[in-house]
Amino acid sequence: MVILSAPQAIANDFESCASRLIGAGIAGPDAAGACGQALYPVDLASCTVDVIGVTEVEAEQALVACQSDRRPQELATCVSDIHQGLEVANSTAVLNNCRRSVLPVRFSDCVVGVATAASLAVADSMSQCIAAGYRPEDVAPTFIFSR
Image 1 (cartoon, helix red, strand yellow):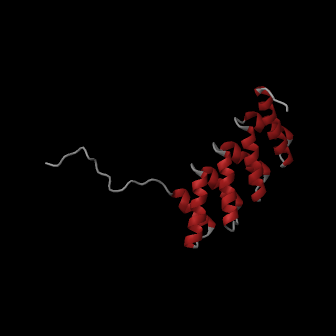
Image 2 (cartoon, rainbow, N blue to C red):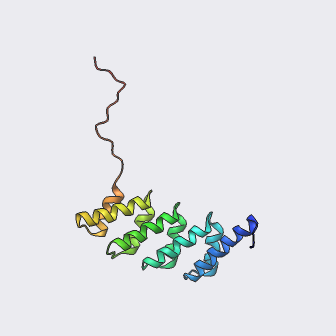
Image 3 (tube, rainbow, N blue to C red):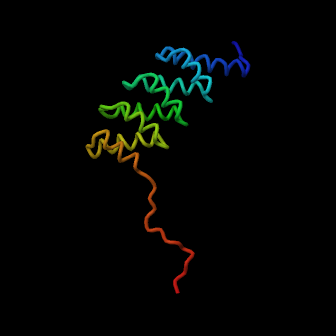
């Protein structure tokens, strides 16, 4: 059994990230730069590879989306869930909407659920779910007393 020190284990994360991205079709310098800038390089590589595996988007586009998301694993889950649950015509729109969502997994649950229950197109259900938000109703201050 080989036990690596912390710096070696971290270095292996960066190596693993770069090799997975290169294997997915990202150019070597781009993969090195992306992995070098990532806080969690393994998550970045997993997100990129997972998105490429279920969509028709370019590898570079998937990498940029995963780099810009604060929850890359949830981004990949969102894209994957929508593609597995529905017939998707525009993978780029799905990727962009999942990236824009604050809670990507909840967003994908909303899209799949609304599209299935209401027989909506994927684009329509995404626009409904991305616009959803907290709208307080019937809010009255309780500290003002009537005379």
